[in-house]
Length: 272
Image (cartoon, rainbow, N blue to C red; front, side, top):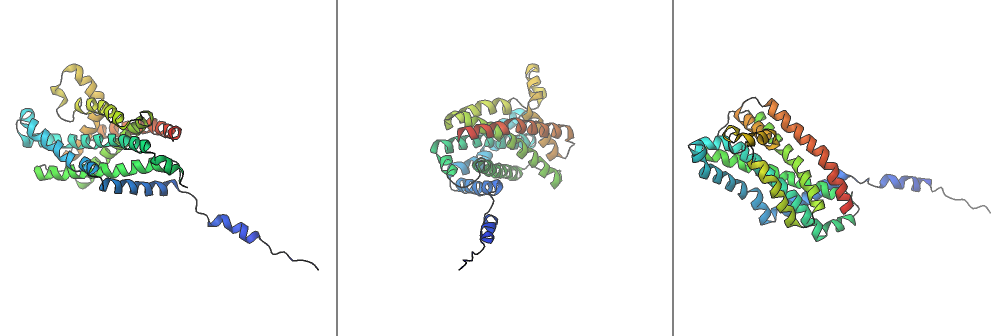
């Protein structure tokens, strides 16, 4: 009596097709959603993107405006584009601090035990912070309009200004991400970030015209990427030509990403 064997190739052959191929983008978006929810339920993080921009603008316009420009209204028109950039740039430093805190609490060890892409937690953290940057920028601009700021720029120019700000902040967040992978304490990351950002933002054209500075300082301000980005954003919001400054700002952002993104990823893989 001959035994008949049923073919099993159909079962074996169809098994792989039923599996879902891991997607770094999908996992990163899921973790970015986690980061956004975490921010919404964290009063400290909400203050960082809602109240802090308002305080910055009020202080600089009404404390320094009269001394610098003669009246607060004139200084508001000059300062708002620069303070918009400064607010988002400062928020980008929070990317490194948040990653350092997550690394210290061990949450990345839990992520590593999950069947997700290894790069997804890093991409998710940066994606959530991009939403924070955008929120801070929108709040800053809306509050500026409430204080009396007006622009003749087209909606497309305003969107281009926001795009430059977000591109610059995105580039800087990779710098602070790399820093968080090297420095283990969140407070140390925060302190070093401030040490980097304070000279870049205050020794720039964000708050005052470059011509009012000493000659030796003007040389640094001229090559400071924050100055070029602030000049481009100011020109776009004023409805003026911004081609040269915008091109330099985008080129600077691209160079920073090309250098620090691979470095941050390599350090992240070594750390986790």
